[in-house]
Length: 329
Image 1 (cartoon, rainbow, N blue to C red):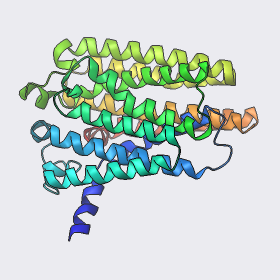
Image 2 (image 1 turned 135 degrees about the vertical axis):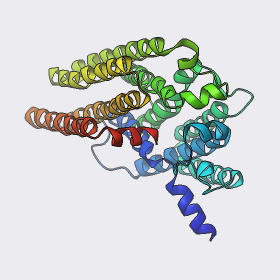
Image 3 (image 1 turned 90 degrees about the vertical axis):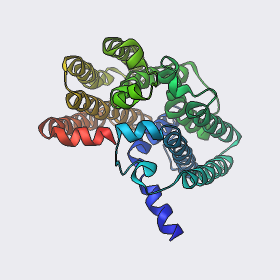
Image 4 (image 1 turned 180 degrees about the vertical axis):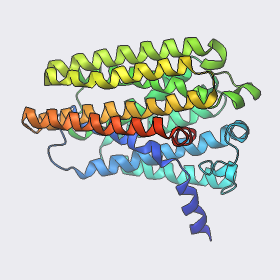
């Protein structure tokens, strides 16, 4: 009975987000010219990051229980709301997940262990008092990329090379800024519950226009910096990624012109898909380049990914309800 309960609990922990952590991990490794050969430490790093994320999810679900009851009633991806688990179950899960994260990181190297400990600390101060970053409108979108972008990237680098070059620092800044542009839009989903419970978010404090302006500026700055890095290191074929940049600006325009909640959520769901497409395409360019793939193969691979994500966007537009449901999860 206990094993079955925790099996169902693990199923609810929003696995859909974990590939994003792995992408940043791989980008960190690829930035050192790693990923040429398989390294078992990448598996350990993935386990550590996913475990840390599970801990973050559990703590946040406990902290935002009352808000989630309004925003996500009956959501099967929220174990407390759905009744699959109790508060004590989540606390136990967080403890176990934290131990798994630390032990996995220790077997990578000392730096990875330090990074994971920082990640676990980030989880605590984000959701729990007295600091509770999640209730601080300006700091929240600036703080979240630490756990989602910087920590995975640095762990990925530490597997192959502990040094931080100027290029890698610029890449971190670019990826950080792009993530800020994406994550600041999350306030739209939780607007109703946040407002009723008095939670101060960037959206509720500064309004829709400021959120979209901030998103556009952060994403544009991050992408331009990323493009400069790619062109300097991998050539002009990197300009193909402008496809994703223009699409993301288009989704921001869609949100601005939307007057219904579902339309906003559709546009944000599209933006999330496009953002992942950009990251995967960048990772593909770097990996193929460091493995000395012919330029034709790199171009074909990038165009294939553009077609694939273009088709995904078409499906989201044709079946908007699926996009809204995916975004709510």
